[in-house]
Image 1: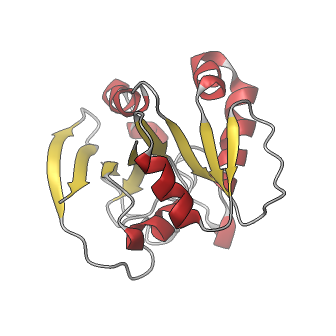
Image 2: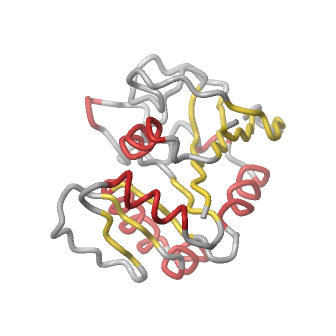
Length: 192
């Protein structure tokens, strides 16, 4: 399997709470929902291409898992059905965490080793959405294969960032880039 990070970020690297005002207010973050005005068909299509690989699924941190469960099961529609059907690997430091969403598997303990084991198994993409802490924990181990980033033409000045803490140097190769009609830069990178 391949680990593919798919996230919206601002030009200053903020990834916190792109979808809703109440999505993630940690630290008093008051800019939630900033990605909505610029998300369009091109963004949806690019996400679908990464998520639609046979034998794939999702790799999520606990907070992102719980937020997606609450949001998409409440809203319904095609995303609800697709997310319920997808296999979800949920990373948590709580080995007793209850996972109420169908097709969910807890990943606890040595996360890097468990994710390396998932990568070694056959299958499609394991897509990481949100899950900033999880992403930053996988980076030093070289476990992320690709980043699909939607860079919004916006500076927020505050909020949790994708690369918030020092990370080890890694060389990336640009796979593709395009700009949506709303000014969002869609850029796909893979590790060299």
